[in-house]
Amino acid sequence: MSFTPSKSLEELSKLKIIKQFNNGHNANSVHLLEGNIIRKTYKNKKPYTQYFNKEIKVLTHLKDCKYVSKLINYNPNNLTLYVTYCGKKPKRTYDNLKKIRKVAKKLHKNFGVVRYYNDSDPRIINKGSRVQYDIFVPNTGINEKGKITFFDFGSHNWHIIKKH
Ligand SMILES: Nc1ncnc2c1ncn2[C@@H]1O[C@H](COP(=O)(O)OP(=O)(O)OP(=O)(O)O)[C@@H](O)[C@H]1O
Ligand SMILES: [Mg+2]
Image (cartoon, rainbow, N blue to C red; front, side, top):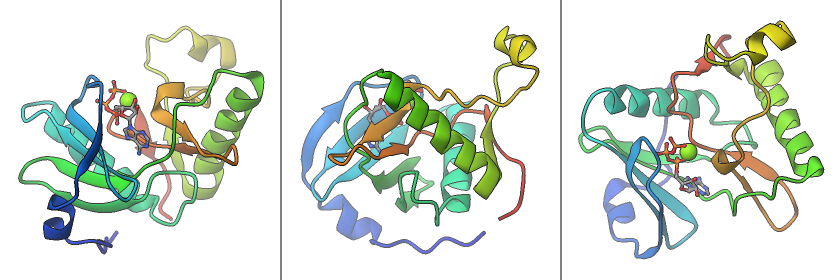
């Protein structure tokens, strides 16, 4: 699937840093830049290169999906990607957890993108399905209107099961 960047890497490299996020497991650094843009740089070693490639693949596949961060541009040479900022981490309220499940179901039904439980996860047996809809809250953002958006698609648990 083709991808057309909405901003050049040169333009993006000039943006000022507004905030630095705590490093996750896969990223070397995550920054909020001016213009509500997130810059994420993966650790430059195996298996993080695969995670970077997976994230680009999933975000490209989901480029018309309004429930995920939009890919703005990326640079495979330094494993950096630029995406739209999705807002703060939602509170773990019943309502927000319900919204998260709803978004995950939309990704599955409308875009053929699913997250699977790890094979060792006991919830697979309980639910009789490998598909995980209760997405990790810190990988989602909420805006002023209460809309939830997903980001962080580098995990090998994310799968594209259907062409869109
Ligand atoms: N598009 C975004 N919108 C809002 N916040 C974001 C976005 N991307 C990253 N963040 C913030 O940066 C943190 C780390 O980013 P991300 O989850 O992508 O990194 P990671 O290293 O893959 O994390 P982990 O593997 O620990 O889940 C997030 O928990 C969130 O606070
Ligand atoms: Mg994360």
